[in-house]
Image (tube, rainbow, N blue to C red; front, side):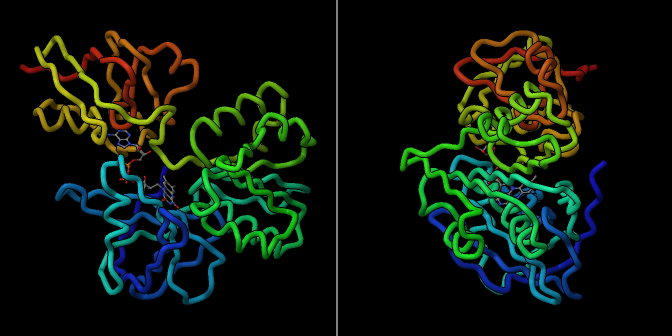
Length: 325
Ligand SMILES: Cc1cc2nc3c(=O)[nH]c(=O)nc-3n(C[C@H](O)[C@H](O)[C@H](O)COP(=O)(O)OP(=O)(O)OC[C@H]3O[C@@H](n4cnc5c(N)ncnc54)[C@H](O)[C@@H]3O)c2cc1C
């Protein structure tokens, strides 16, 4: 069960670019920061299309007593707008932030570690690598990105960690062979991974195929980034005689809400399963972006979490639990 947010007013203490699309933001909460460990994040209250929402951002450590929280936010142009809001915040602006929460804790007791980061997924992995280095732990860090100029902290990590860090820059033709890397691990090594869904899928498949202990694969994804770039599509609900357009930057849930359809939802990031609806039929490919259903349930394509999941190259026919009477 996710920890409930306790909100505190805070001020933007500093903000500056740290790569082509990533901005490092320092946030000073009133009353001082809480303690936190590697992998922790805070929630930030944002306004999207004049509506209050929240977005989560990993704390980029190491935590220093009394120092502001540090987060690194990647600008996502095709998104609903949380990252744009964060990039527009000026020094001195007021924001509301939650206490630090940690769903991706680092277990310091393993004999060896493999850390894998894809893109902005470096944020928790960065803190983990520095913490493990400080403890003299045995680890390697594999960091993948599209271009070196958009890989925050790459130079700093190289400088601090030397050959323990390997960079995989796809525009230089280098990609991580996740399955090959997992094959080399002994069964007591813990793998910590944060990156896009296809990277996680590849790791989970190899981990399972090689019969590694399930508890030694630990990961976090940043929510709704699916297997495909979002596209516009149509959604039909025959029982309500509705046909609606879902733009690339809105979810099915948002479009149904705007049309006055009574759907229930909670987390709005594909974790709680509150907004599930039945899929009557789908053309194209359903891009299941939730963390709620199993792989087998995704493959059945009978239900979807409409806060995050969508369709590509096709349209959807859905049935909601809504009854007009
Ligand atoms: C625990 C945690 C830690 C995080 N840490 C970081 C961090 O350190 N740095 C960071 O930059 N981000 C982090 N995130 C992600 C962050 O919370 C936001 O999701 C991110 O800033 C994008 O917000 P947005 O509103 O701009 O995009 P969103 O609209 O939330 O989009 C997120 C993704 O969904 C896709 N998308 C866009 N529109 C839709 C739609 N209508 N339906 C479905 N999908 C859509 C986008 O292509 C994008 O890939 C973290 C998330 C979590 C849960």
